[in-house]
Image (cartoon, rainbow, N blue to C red; front, side, top):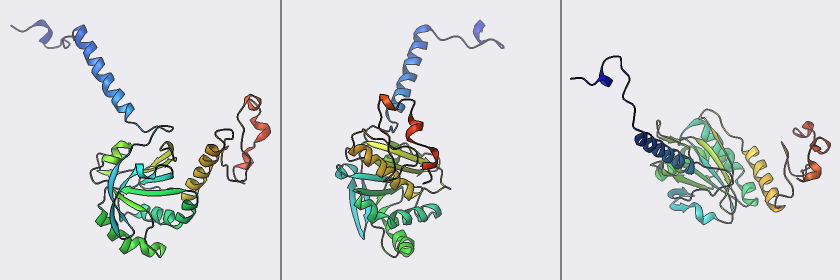
Length: 239
């Protein structure tokens, strides 16, 4: 005897109402869990502790130890890769300027601290005529990358993600690019300066598109509604 619902050409038997509701609840829980793990601007940056290479020494670093400072957190696919060699050199070249702004830099990949050491000695130090001055973190199992949503499970590496974290440990901005395209450290510094101005003025001033120090800011309020055109023009972007 073959039940009618299993005969050829028949549809699968429908789930009972309570089974459907249970399935929906489980699916909702999964979605909520994924959403809760997503990085969001204006929310705390996930803390972590990992081994690192720093100026000739193997050390451990925790994001929490930089509370009270701005942090530029840079993820990248791997050591001895072409685009990141240019990026890390460009960041190292601007390190003193970043330090004057109260910014600490942390770079992270899945490579071990030993590989970081070899890369620094054999290539990077030759590109900038000195050792990389900031911490080079090691996230070998991708735990940190997963927390920040930039770990690629298929390739087993971090994608090219950059996060700006304020002194309170809050993510103010982030950018994620595919591997072939490098980031612009000058634009990153411009954004940090803009975030710092907004923080200093407690939101009384905000920065329009392309803002640079010394340029006009906007002061949010009822009187500005519909009148931004009187205070700002597009030609200021390229000034």
